Image 1 (cartoon, rainbow, N blue to C red):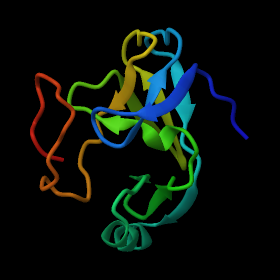
Image 2: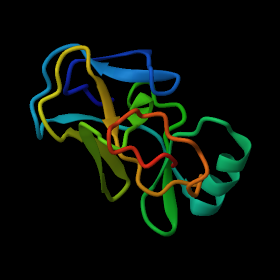
Image 3: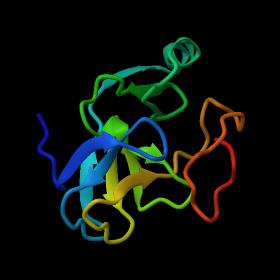
Image 4: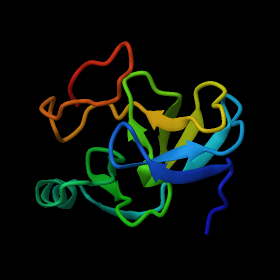
Length: 134
């Protein structure tokens, strides 16, 4: 079991559903945490994405993905076009790091990049540079 490296809590988000929020200062470049999940094939990931409304799947490479549907914490990091964190994929691990200092009470967000929505899902991040769709 991993240890949370940054002080966080799950609560209601203005962006979408639940979100992950800092409960203390998270310094820029600090590791926030890591998604837990099961490595599955891209084919299975695509099938899940068609069946499930809210997914937590990250492509690891062109053959495999991490299904983090059952992750208890970091799956709640919402997308933002102006994020304060980023995700880093190393082999079958997906880690989140702070892009800058994150203040207590601030929602932790990451730019998801390309998604299975293929630019059809309206983005609700509210960032000044919001692209409008995921």
